[in-house]
Amino acid sequence: MARIRNRRKPVAEMNVVPYIDVMLVLLVIFMVTAPMLNQGVKVDLPKVSSEALPQDNNAQVLTISIKADKTYYWNMGSEVDVDTVQDKALTLDEMVRAVTAIMNQTRSQGKQVQVFVRGDKAVDYGAVMAAMGGLQQAGVGNVGLITEAP
Image (cartoon, rainbow, N blue to C red):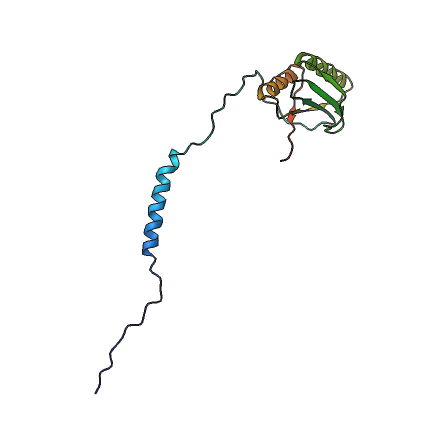
C-alpha cells in the first residue's frame, strides 16, 4: 500500500512582522526629531499702553480706516461701512480729538458706539496699535478689527 504523504498547504497570510518593525523605527525617529523642530517665528511686538477691551454689541457703529500713509478716515452709521468716507484726519491727535467729540455727542444722546478699526495692509502694526491706544484715550471702551477674507 502506498502511503499518503501529508503535504502542507501554502500559507495565504501576509507576514506583517517586518512592517511593524519598520513602523516602530519610524515612530522612534519622529519622536526624537519632533522636539528639535522650530515652533514659531520671533517677532518684536510694539509696546502700547492699553488694556483688554470687553466685547459689546451696540446700535451705532464708527468705522475707522487707516491708509498706508497713516491718514485716518471714518464713517458713523448703523452698520459697518468701509466704502463711505464721512471725515478724515491727517494725524493721530486729530483723529483722537474727533473721536472724543463723536463719543461725547453720542453719550449726550444716550447712545452707545461700537468702534471698528480697518488698517491698510501696508500700514505697520505699530501704527494700528497706536490708533487703538488713541481710541482708548478718547473714551472708546470697545474696539473691533476688520479684516478681508482671502
